[in-house]
Amino acid sequence: MHRAPHVHDALLEGLRKRGFVVERCADDVDVESAVRAARSDVVVTELAADGSTVQMCKTLRERMPLLNVVVVAHSPTLESAMAAMRAGAYDYLLWPQPVDSLALALDRALTNRNLQREVRRLRRALNPGLGFQGIIGESAAMRDVFELMRKVAPARAPVLITGETGTGKELVARGLHRASPRADGPFVAVNCAALPEALLESELFGHVKGAFTDARTANPGLFVNASGGTLFLDEIGELPAPLQAKLLRALQSRTVRPVGGHEEIPFDARLVTATNRDLDTMVEVGEFREDLFYRIHVIRIELPPLRARGGDILLLAGHFLNLNAALGDEPARTISHGAARRLLEYPWPGNIRELENAIERGVTLATGPIELDDLPARVREWAPSHVLVAASDPEELVTLKTMEERYIRRVFAATSGNRTRAARVLGIDRKSLYRKMQRLGLEAEPES
Image 1 (cartoon, rainbow, N blue to C red):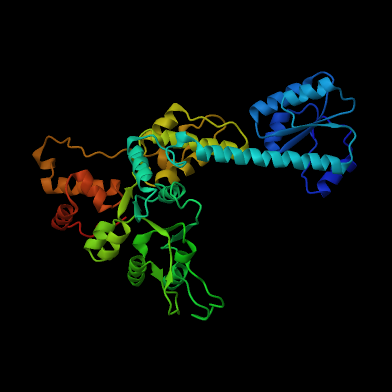
Image 2 (image 1 turned 180 degrees about the vertical axis):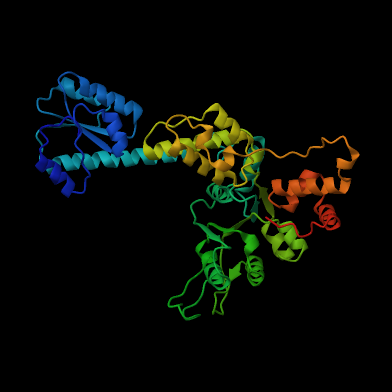
């Protein structure tokens, strides 16, 4: 409440009893600062004869577009009402009003605020400037991804999405679903690494009543639940070997047999899978079934790491700044030149998730533009590593084998241990890389 001396304590108490959190604001307090500090949704103010109320409405609406202002007046005129509404007031009430009438006006204002938020969210999701299906990116690498997504979205063929952790694989899966003829059907997602084998089998293929101790009712399973839509299996590389065989059988027959059941149940779901593992190498060493591998990756979409997306880093940073501003109804912060340069230099091993975390930290700590000191320590203190040959004394130089070993280790570190991407950087095929690793004693190099 602002500048409302006639709003007596009984009325304030009545609003509080109806679930509103109410704070009275003195005349000499800066309203905008008070509203931001209290994270208020609605301002109720009395119409002042000097025109300051109209100016306040205009200022608040310009700086806080989602804030609603309700103006009350003892001696209203048509001119004053029109001036307040033109300045951005949401409602204009004759005073005094019973508490129920004011509560109703506040409810309407809150509903309007929620609708404005939803419209903003939908506009962001539908903004054609966000690449494809709301996925942000303008780099050449992401334009290639978007083009492939447009081509494969209408098809029924299974899609395998690969990429490092945090590159947005589930966003791509959801984008494929929304752009497909199955968009009105369900999108069902499950993380294969998050559930133990027995529970995952029951979740995927269903179970009949009494199949095990806690099976008090039948469960059709996610394959059947996703019929008419898309089933997304994340972390498919973590699927246990027994379930790999059952998944292959389900994909071949387009039916599932629930745990404890004897009948085959048909399903009609498009399969999209994702992994941050190197499935090609897992197939070579016998950790993933070759026949299942070829069944699930008819179409392959490989997402580039954030460090390979150039200016998309700042584009995404700006997006996260806008999201934080929308949540707090504050103007979006900016990023200083020094901080922006470091964002572009840093290799982002955690990819988009790590960038979002860094921006959220910056918004929390900064009092103005986000500076380098507002970023996480690992980003601030990062220094590039180089392969440098600076010695002139032959005794200080290393052998070619040692240099090759160091460089291969460096490439492995940059690609998070992914042999397929490492081989591509080195300009050799995976088998040649594997032989080099054995020759150099690197066969135990950890996988991503």
